[in-house]
Image: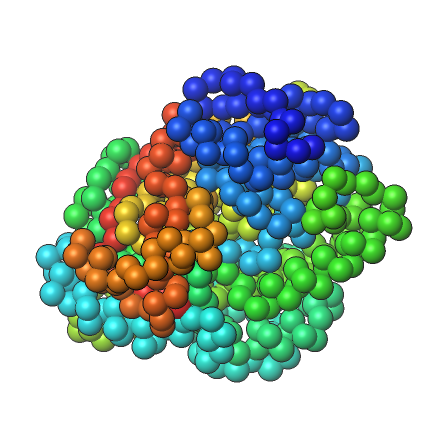
Length: 483
């Protein structure tokens, strides 16, 4: 289906639908305001959301969050659930950066306590956490046996080596591990690519950012998350680096061959897939889980070294500063979950690509420490504006398979952003707004300039008003470290 042929109906002020037609198996639904929808209407990511609705075994809807933008196969900001018996699994529905995600660390430090040391903190973190394209000087080079342990144990592997505490695992989605991981289905090349990337931040939109809690919207939830207005927090946004990228690359080739074998027809070859119960489907899920576990271990390791940087610069221990992990969420991942489908509870294979799980109070998969309030939802914005903390809701469980947005969402490609801000000194511009930035080169900064993104406040307002996540706190950036 071409973009000009797509008929869109407005259901509410925050929800739109492309009705089922032709060979679509389900409708496509888009969460957006009038303002955001004006741009989405002219973006090929809308075509991708409709294409997903053609896939075998999809149930209820193909969903797009308000941060939707063009991806590989699925749009970034895409969500879909597939039946176990008839459904498929697709690398394009998870993405190249398997378990790209974000974690938030709170502190008991007021902004005044660190304001004069922000430059020192940014410099120390930049020294201690390798970042940038091809950054291949991780904490240590891992042999094959250690890569297998990382791939099957996830964040717990990092904790076992002294990079954090068991309490961190209790504050991480899935405890920082998908148990279905099987290292036997990961290629040697993927292992080589990941072997010296543990503890590295990567480049592009990946970052480590020191923020101030600027506003509280929901006091009980903020208290449960340990967030206090005026206090310092920091975020880590990264994924599985070259390890996950290669796993995705390998299985895209596998899935393209598998579609012919299983006579699967989809409108875009980028949606290459295989039946969930097939050998190819099982093997991809097992390898994808390895990539997800690597990413959780990576963020755990980076957090440890960032905390050590705080200790060096401020001369105080972690406990004295009240540095605690609030939560770690995955953005690009497939999981087997139970959801209500046609009035009955059914096990499905969830694909979330550039989307965040948003489970409510009382749900057995909401971490026990937050079960009375709901799962924290972390929505980073661009480096020049703001980020948000939200909480999961029952409405999300009923309407979006417990899913919500994951960030601001690009409005310009990296090349377009670099072209449009040619000549702008982004670092100087950020400094004028009181934001310190450390990056390996100017290219990353111009590609990640605020103007390349939607305003995350607009995105968050949609999910808040639609009820699929509820605003808890707003964060503003003070210092940003990028590759």
